[in-house]
Image 1 (tube, rainbow, N blue to C red):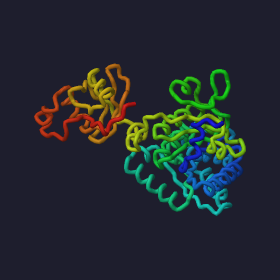
Image 2 (cartoon, one colour):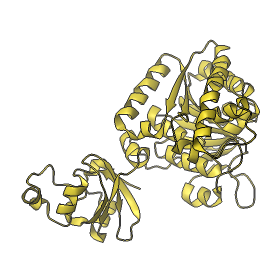
Image 3 (cartoon, helix red, strand yellow):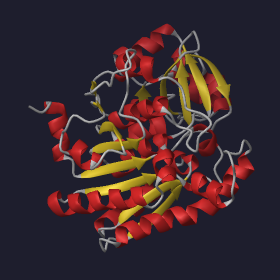
Image 4 (cartoon, one colour):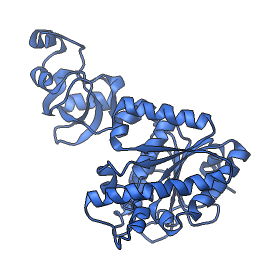
Length: 368
């Protein structure tokens, strides 16, 4: 009998499929062809729409440039990505062309996700591609990116794309059987990421074409879960791994999404951007924000760090400096320093103007 949480995957209609560098480096033409076969069949059988998030440009570029090992410097990695991107897209284009399915290339950087206008532009473009029965093929723009090359293997991007497209599920195809516990055995289902997965996820794998590792996949599953998307990390070398995962078979590790789903906008506030500064608050303000879900008022502010403008994303930290919330500031850092600890009624007299009573409005605040 299938686990009911896995069985729910059979209802997924819009998915994000992420395939890692190691799988593509091993078989740069074969893996895309096999995955295209599965996606084409799932489109015909259940009307499924898929977005493919692919790694592999750097690995293919290294091969073309006859690099014996992954370069340590960013410019060489960017050069390898520039050379490999063309080959990568050719493989995906040929794979889907066999089924008369067009693809559309989407190159993103983390800055595209952080900027709200560019985030929405990317969403609208991908929605238009899906409506036209095109398979969007997404990759990080490593030729101009920096953090993308240094810190991940597109795992985080895949999770953020789930928010972009409103995905029902994230399927991560990797080169291991799933998340393993301390005893080395596969963990079939994770219901609490922080308690069950983070302690055993380990660090990144180094010295190979990819740079992700299980820790980044666990983090991606957690971020995807906050949008309501189930995540499954599956062994991509297994035959029909994608189809079997979406049929609810016991393959890989399923990460069950929590009940406290965030709206797309609040998910972007929490995870899609980098805070420009931090606002420290006292214990009373922290309790009001966390327990009573109120807005943040200037009376509870004890300090401001960084330089930011009204509308920028900021961290909210407690007396010990621990971040517990993020939100969009109603006032810039300079003005906020002047009204910190004061009553909302005093704002106009201190600043010479008053925009709103709040430092961060509840609708623009996410508790982490």
